[in-house]
Length: 146
Image (cartoon, rainbow, N blue to C red; front, side, top):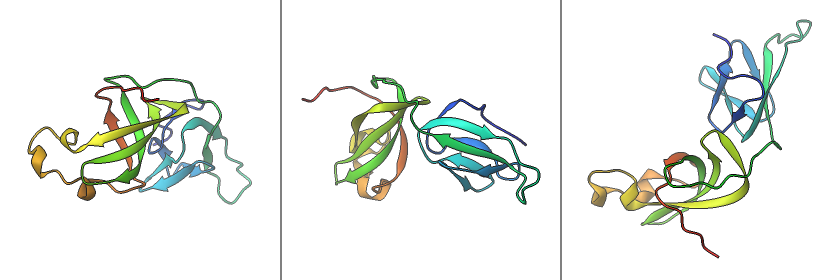
């Protein structure tokens, strides 16, 4: 199957980097099912295989340090990590905007009424999210808090 992404690409947690038959996970990546996936926000690095080694698969790893300063705005698709929950909302640390990792820390809230479009009153935040979950969401509005 081969590589799904090019070396030097910006990746976010959960991005598929390649299949686990052809590629071996390195720093910042892990095997999930049949794929090697990113575990960190950063830049993809592909290290050619050493055919003398017992494992002759190409190494894929994610390196930090090449993040860009970007502010999430309404309409952007973001990737974040759930930090805490209560009955009305889930608090999220935003890691990526689109496919670009963030240098600064931004926080977001997923409100009960924003989880789905229908049957809003039946949504249970504690049944939908857990701290540590990685989520992908669309920014609805931006409020700057001092």
